[in-house]
Image (tube, rainbow, N blue to C red):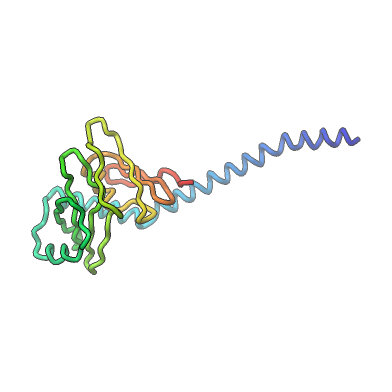
Length: 187
């Protein structure tokens, strides 16, 4: 009797344990899918795509010489050792760092001065990436200032025509041709 009971329990375990793990795995995938939908639909993503695209359009038109530029430039006390050009987008003033050579990408630090005087930095530090070549298919950056990519990432993807993978504290994102796409939740 005891032997039969042990065999029955073993048989039940063999059948039900994989089913339980399968259910847990399905539930985890559904949860990750909801997370992706949550992050993708965030207003920050839509705003970054719009602002970054508008910044790129302003960049194509050339730097501005508006009289407000010097006043707003004086509010920033931690410019990097790059040459900065100013662009006005929806009454906000962007100071975009230019690369020291044509084949480098300045990731940071760029600035936005909003109409209410708030200064937003693109990164915590000043840096540019290695030379870009015709063989460069993408680059990746760590972004610690928010959970989603910013308009600066969108702008850079449009300017350099290269996908950028942005790793935030919670997620990995792909920014390509002005569009931000959720890739995965970070573990």
